[in-house]
Image (cartoon, rainbow, N blue to C red):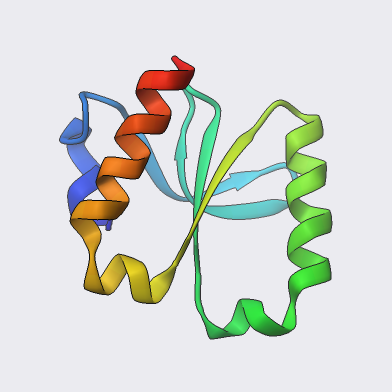
Length: 92
């Protein structure tokens, strides 16, 4: 996914990877949109409450979230990118 988001390749937006926000790190972050994109793998299956609390804290700071399953990212990146693009067009 980073290959598609880095260097302003995606809609000209500047994304950071593994971005520290507050006391947390998000997978991908676009400051201009205050958008965090999280890719959830197996480790998240056992940390639902921690993830929920973390997301709520960051939402209280104005960060908006999109979440994708890592399998979806690996198998259908074009669909994931279409979903992100639709979100950007609707929310910017």
